[in-house]
Image (tube, rainbow, N blue to C red):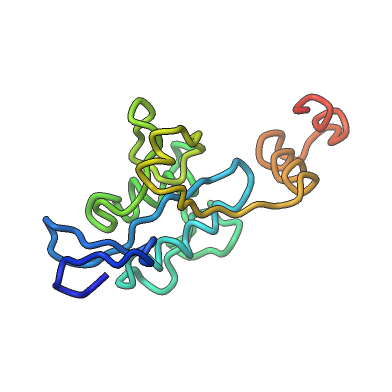
Length: 161
């Protein structure tokens, strides 16, 4: 969009004029498929707000590194929920940037696994971003996350089919 002019260009799907903030800013509809790239949220967050610290990333509770950015509280919150609700609160760092699902499904965490309904498709012009991975890798990721890597991955795979 045009800086300061308020005229949105048709080709600017990820950037729109914000009339209240009087600036051009990112508008992102992140479709986050379960076990498909919570870490992709960091790339989107840095695109949306370049003032984030360079090492800001989705916290994995020490699985990525031992920095304060990767720490998680004892309440079990991690990944996008911890990032967008606690570490970099959405309303302070990403005001009016992210799609939050259907009206009845509002959630402050843009990394939730929302379904895309007709109203969202119309409102966002069908412009969603997402990351996908091979189904087998999703099963392994889910097994490690939900079952702690314990037991039979074959039984787990059959259970989630």
